[in-house]
Length: 336
Image (tube, rainbow, N blue to C red; front, side, top):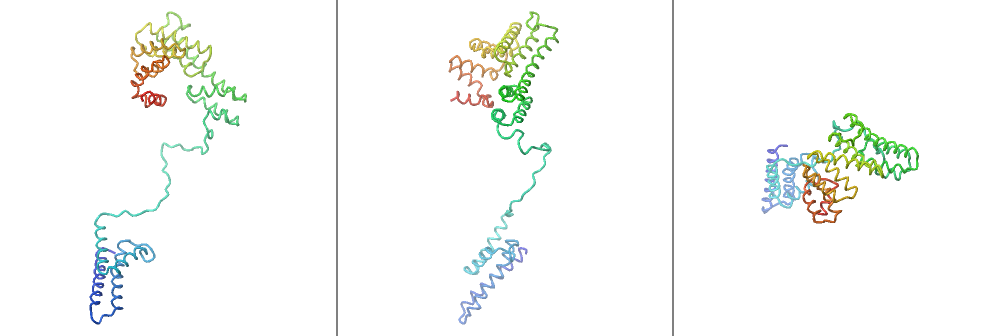
């Protein structure tokens, strides 16, 4: 039903109600006729109005609550009720399209091109961390799978788990963990031999060893230390090798700031904090940024009981360290 038909019907209904009110002023008025005419005006003017507003729906094309509102306006406010309601509807229609209430629709999630084709609904290792599984899982096969998975982890993360697996009560788990640890260590030792063979050198500590070779050997020995692959006497030997080759490189050139940093970190592990502080400042002088050296300088100053220097170092690296999970909490603590 279009707007013109609804408007004409509304005006007819208003006219019928107006005539009923006029009949009420007659001397020989008939109240049944007056009420019938008022009701007819509500039907004639209200029904098209309801159809136009609601647009269909319900048993008779509209909801009962909407019909109750129209009847109430037409009965208790004759003439003015229907006319005012029609005017309000007209203004509302001129205000722009209405937002229709919609129900919830279930849709299938889109298939994205980068999503995996298949996923395991049960996690690969079940609930809990890898460390928790190695410590507490009663299933030896599951603990064995965790050890196998450690081969794909970075050394810094895998080695503590593998050392924990060395204390497992099942022989297969212990032997596999030892094999993975030994394989990682032998891989680095093999790289050291390959570097020396490519340079045509048998002894890395020979006086004629080029600085570039010494720098590479120092990096590899530091990798043994950093990953935690060596302990005890092997740790002390690896730190000695790092210091020996780093100092030789530093004495031969004013560059190689990385060697100064490695030597400083080796001295921190040896708890020689005064010497470590000097080498870390040397790394800054040779070109390393404060963002790289600053955390280690702060650690050294903390061990030397120099809180003012710690706060100064933290303030210099605060901007970048707040984005690094390992340092964010330290920066917040020392910045307050």
